[in-house]
Every structure is written in structure tokens, then in C-alpha cells.
Amino acid sequence: LAQALSKLGASSHSEQSRKMSRMLLVWTAGLGAGVVAAAESAAVAQQCSSGSDAASCPVRGPQGVDLMQRSFVHSELAITQQLHGDYDCDGDGVQDCGKWDYRMGMCQNQAVCGHLYKFPDATLDRSCRCRKCPSFPGTAFGDAMLKNPEQAGAPFNAMSWGLFKNWADHMDTCAPWVMPRDDTALQNLLAYARGKGYKVRISGAGHSAGGIVTDGQNRQVLVLSLAEYTAPGEWEFGIRDMADGSKRATVNAGWTQFHLYEKIRPLGFFVPAQTAGYFFSLGGIVANSVHGGSYHSGFVHGYATRMRVMLFDGSIKMIDTEEEMRYWRCSFGLHGIILGVEMQLEQREQLQMYVVKEKMSAWNSEEFWKFIKQTAEADLPAEVLPAEG
Image (cartoon, rainbow, N blue to C red; front, side, top):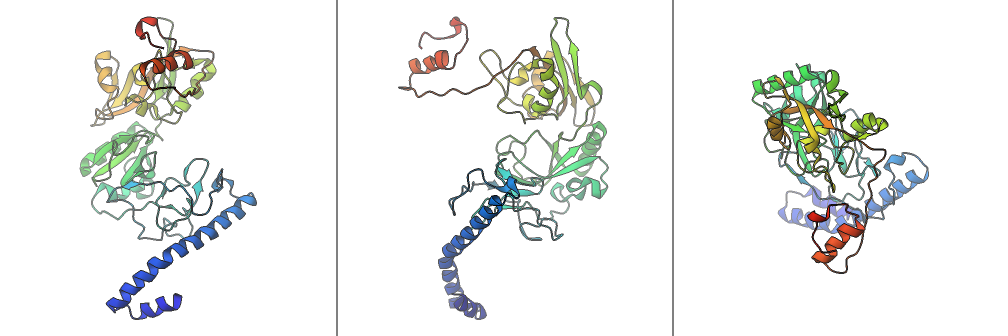
């Protein structure tokens, strides 16, 4: 086959040769994929058995080519690998990508690497490629000040986190992901964006689905995150006593729920409603309507009592009346940037969250409410429950 392809390549000007070459390449693709799969599986097995680089070893080893390769929706403007190959992102001769973290379920070096499958990738490691974009001169996508603020001498103190993608890793874009470090940096970034005619979108932990933050189609969009932001005074973190004896915490909106609980849990406090995970940003939690909820509690954003925010022109405002708060909760960043949040707290000695499962004998009202009342132990007032169950 190699000799035949070599001869065909030498006569590539012939249309007949080109057609035959394509046929042979298609015929040999399956064989090539099998060889690559066997080689890479053997290499992974040897590496894991030696105990080296444990983060790249699967919890349950993949078998041959039977690997789960997720499907992705990428912006038509997004990922290309035209420069420096698929794994050396900056052309310095060092491989930046090509490692899958089996414990975290994502590619290592997330700032520059993403899961980008190409046939005949046989392992998840092989699909961890550089997330690159064309130059896009004259746009936010191509602005060096946004892509590398520190090296480019940007007029705002910020860290770059590569290009925006969502947590599920199925929405990749070429929009610069910028993380200002303080109020002044935020104000300077907004002024810079206004001067350039850019649109600023706000992200939390990136857990939003689809294109809620950006779908990557508008080249004038940049994405802002508070992950590196430090707030002034009590708005970084503080606890105050209320007249009714309760307590409230003021906290940096760029913090995650984990950061907040690291502060309040040793004191015996919790937020009244809980989320499904600890890694969501507090600003993102109160800016949408999906986090929280229990038998006696509503969404987490319902327990936000004050906010410190920045408007489009860089001015900072306190939102401390219910008349205004009702518009900032679940606002999806449309009004401005939520810099800090004050949350209601409640005293609890402990909190346990667990899952219960039961196979219902039928899908009807009786069986549903039986599950809620008995298996799921709903301690709800009788007047709010139906008679079934």
C-alpha cells in the first residue's frame, strides 16, 4: 500500500490517480486507527503501571478504541490548528496539550487546551488539542491587549484565561476571557472596551449552557470574569449582626460557594438554600434562576439582600432596597456587573445532603406523592400537599 500510494503521489496531477489515492486512504483508515489505538493503549497502560503521571491514568482503563468521545458544537469562527501543530500552542517546542485528566473529566491545562476530536483519535489524551483562533485583526477576538494583557501592556490590570468556553466544554469560542483584579482594573477595562466599540459579556464559573454568555459569532465580544477580582473592605468578606438577631455575610461575587463556606461553616452558618455543587461563582448563582431550592427554601438568589454593582460606565452603586433588588436577582448580567453580594445566613450544627432512589410501580399521582412524602421524607405542611401518597 505504501508503494502504491507513493506512486500515486508522484503522478498526483492525474485525476484518476487522485481518485484511486482517496479510495486507498479510505480503505486503510480503519487499519490505521486500529494500529494507533493499540499503540496508545499500550503506552497508557505502561505509563500507569509504572506509577508515573497518575493524573493522566484512567480510573477504569479504556479498552481499545471503545472510548467515549463527546460531541461538540464549536463556533464557525473558532478553533483552528494552523500554527505550531495541535499540541504545542505557542511554538516554543514544548507540548502544552495532549493530556486528559481522568479524575476531573477534562483536558489538562484548560487555559489553552480543549477537547477537540479528530478522526482517528483513539484516546481522550490525543483529543486534547490547542484551542486556537485566526488573528481577526481589528476585532476583540484579535486584540492583543485582551488576549495577553500583562505582556501587551494593557491599560487595565487583568489576567487572561485564554478563550471563553463553557463548563460542559461543548461551546468553544474565540472571545478573549479576561479577569480584572480590582475595581480600577474593571473601570479601565470597560473604558477600553467602549473606546474600541466592543461588547462586554459577564461570566461566572462558565456553567451556563449553550450561548447564554456568548455563542462566539460576534467578533467584537469579550468575556469578563471576577475569578481574580479582589473587593475592597467588607465586600471581600464580612459578617454583620442584624436587629432581629440574625447574621448576614457580605462576600466577593467572584468567590465560589466553596470560598464562602470556608469562612462561615466553622462559625456554624449556612446559606438557607444549597446548590448542586460548590464551584459556582456567587455572582453567577444570584444572577440566574437555577441554583438552590428545598422543601422549605427557594432559589439561592432569593436570600441575597444587598449588592454592590458596577454599571456600564464604571460607576459603582449599592443596591439595598427590595424595589431594586428584585430586578438584579436573576438579571443574567444585563444591568451591570455584580461585584459583591450580601447573603442571609442561618445557624445550623450540621447539614447533610443525600440521594434516595426508588423504582415506582407505576407513573401516576399516587406513586409520585408516595415517593415525595415517604421515601423523600418531605416535611411539608399537610395543607400544601394533596391527599395522594
